[in-house]
Amino acid sequence: VQLQASGGGLVQAGGSLRLSCAASGRTFSTYVKGWFRQAPGKEREFVAAISKSGGITSYADYVKDRFTISRDNAKNTVYLQMNSLKPEDTAVYYCAAARTVWDNRVAREDKYDYWGQGTLVTVSS
Image (cartoon, rainbow, N blue to C red; front, top):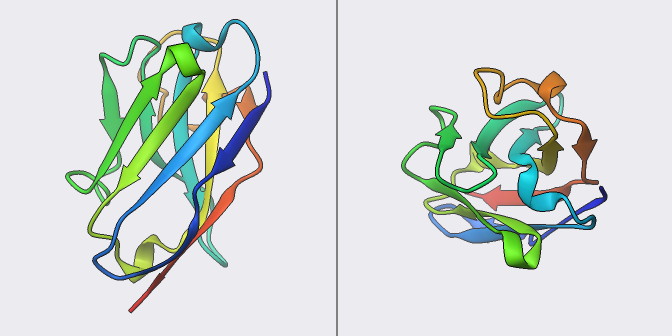
């Protein structure tokens, strides 16, 4: 599986962006998908995850009610809609895919087997 993230850019605080992560591979629909981010000088952190059917989602507290993760298995793509962006959301955003089933490790990096290259989101104040 190869993952290609896109959609990053520069936006003012309060604005919105939608990130996309396109995947190659026939088994995309069976993978749990996640988004992580890494701000300058900080460790990578969990943002959101979605089950293979899209019926279950999980969010980090700092993005809950502002970000929405979704997926379109027919298009092999997962999305991250980001609203009410804040300067502290500035980071490189990475998508990831896990072969194992949904469990209580979805917020952990070591659950994921495949990673995209990242897309930069910059939120100006």
